[in-house]
Length: 213
Image (tube, rainbow, N blue to C red; front, top):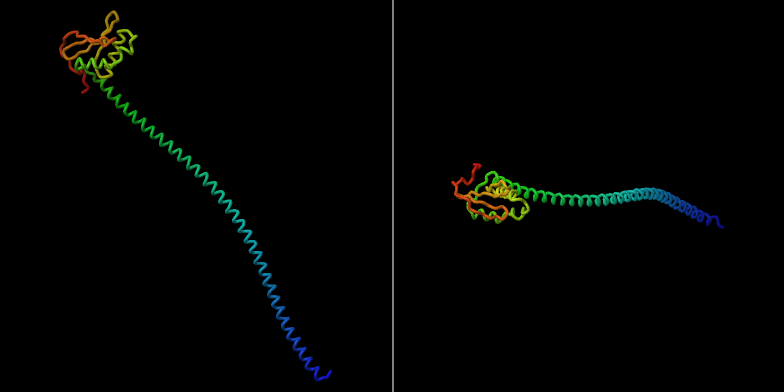
């Protein structure tokens, strides 16, 4: 080969080698950078995997908390239902107690009124009042098997409970009658059949022998 021709060829080869070496070094540098980035990404992936595991644990824990809360909510609902039922029972009991109290107050009022009549009895104001009362009284039928003396005493108590004076009179032979002072007349009553009969005239007596006032 011609000497002068070889020199340019060699120069070209040298330049080619220099350029190739430069490009190879650049590629090697880029490859190193890529490997560094891959290593960093692998670290990020590992960190993300740890985070995912942690989040999975948190989700599991939250699911357990939700289940616990649902159980507690169900228990609270059951407790609320029980309390509502207890409240309904209590209200019903209070209502019954109020009703019983009202009934008892009415009974007390009635007893008070009845006690006042017993404490302050009066004579019958007329024969009609006497016969009407005897018609409503059941001593003659309810105690039909008792003796006349016993019926006379029972009739006396019955009249007294209604605020009237109808004293019993017992004969020596055990017979019994009741006496009614009506204005200026004295009347007799047979306790076995409520028959009334005139006895005699008397001095008029106070309507209430011993008034409370």
